[in-house]
Image 1: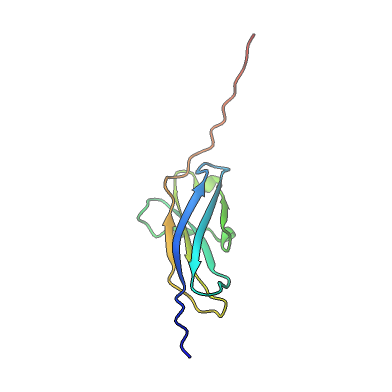
Image 2: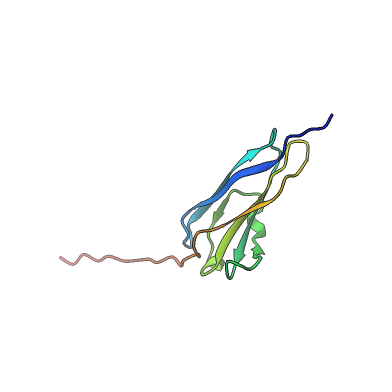
Length: 112
């Protein structure tokens, strides 16, 4: 019997706060039978067109807490869909909408 259920992602997105200390969350929709342990990776990019450097400490996570190392860089999330029986689908990558900004603290002094 041939199993014709294709493993694929219908959409992939990154939402959240693109500043140091912020939280970015990746989300996706899996199609193709019962999902197994799909593979998640986050990458930092100097420019949007470079292949990026893996952020190993958040491999396997859907959330990334933005660190100081990411300031001024772009971020991407890659998901490789994996069906429960180990059959892999095609990886897809989503590039963040903007580069990571430095946290700006402001102090307000009320002098009355």
